[in-house]
Length: 326
Image (cartoon, rainbow, N blue to C red; front, side, top):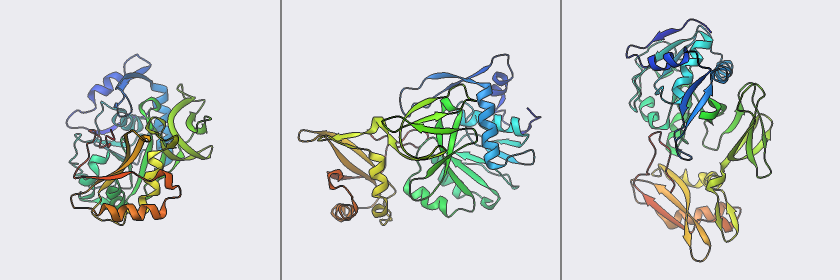
């Protein structure tokens, strides 16, 4: 543990420091509730330091680096930025959590964590060329945002992880397609018979951790995320992973500039049990028939065609920007 070089005029980190430097071996955290009811959990301080060092190794963070944190320390993402600064000796700048980012720091920023609701503000901020790496977590990045981030002067990574793993344990470069996630140092992967990801590392107290995320395992240190097991649609006995279909139809939907985002969901059907529908987010009218024709041309399995397309002007989202599918 090193001396901390901290800029925190609003004392945003004070409560966390009190908890971190007490005699307890754990920190109390709570999940966001995006995949279930929110719950309080205990996180080992040893696990948090291991995770912090792994992220610092990945991004070559050291005592000459600067970290910028615009996230609340009520959640694991904000807590871990402080721990990363503590283990590396990097300078840490705390900023009031808001969807409107206040990045008035003009020197180099080596790591900036954000949630999707902060992307628009980030891309209009000054001094973008001074930012080296951005990590986005808390919710998937929509199509419109991915396009803009790919044109930005910094590297952007999508994170994979959860509160239980002390923030992310894998990172994937943001592209138009689904990212391939690569493990942080000390982490390896395997899968269950149902292809659900298993996170393994003998160093961490949570290992092994069996998730509900269905993946294509590339090797022991990388995977392609397909979707959540609890999102599966069972239509006439055919199991459909919504996130997999979303990836397959991306080349079609990216042709329509007015489509800001989209998702696959389900509804009850007297004929099929459940049926799949495609929901589009757009402020402008969409020729749904043309979209359906183009999707049919590229779908490898016609049984997995959407039964209907619905257009909404805006999606319901969580505070972090995650789309509420149901």
